Image (cartoon, rainbow, N blue to C red; front, side, top):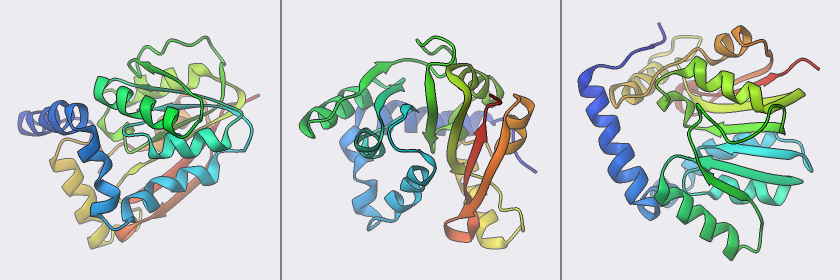
Length: 215
C-alpha cells in the first residue's frame, strides 16, 4: 500500500534532512554521486532518456544541479526551480562555470512563477516523494506544461511485483519521511496519459514515469 501521510517522527527526520543537509550543505549533498561510486547518478540520469532534445524544459527541485547541467546541454531552453536557497546558489554557479544558461528561480512547486503551457517538458527526480501534497504538486506541473507536452518523474516507489529487496528499500525511504505515491494514478487523475512506466534500481524500487498532456 502506498503512503499518503507522515508520522511526527518522519516529519522531524525530513525537516532535518531538508533544512540542514539539503539546504545548507549543497556540496555535501552533491557528493552523493562520489560516495555511491556513481550509482546515484545512474539512477538520476535515467530521466534524460525521456527528455527530447531541443525543447523548452523546466526542472522542478534541481538540487545540486548535476542533472540540470546535463539538461542545459540537451534542451533548447531551460528553467529550474528549487525552494532551497543553498541549492539555487550552488546550481547557478555550476551552470555559469559550465558556460551554459538556465533561468533559475527560488520558488515552490505549488506556486510556480510561469504562465500556463510555458514548457514542452517538466522533469523532477527524487523530489516528488518529498512533497506533502503530491496531487497539488502534479496539478501545478500539469498547468505549466503545454498541450502535447510531457511530465517526467523519477522517484521511489513500491515495486509492483512486491519483491522483498525493493520493498525494503522503498520502506526505508518512507521511514525518513518520503511518500510512496502512486505517481501513475496521480497523473491519470490530473488528465495525463501515462505513456511510460519503468522500474529499475535495487529491487526495482526506483521508477521512471512519463505522462503526456492531451493536445
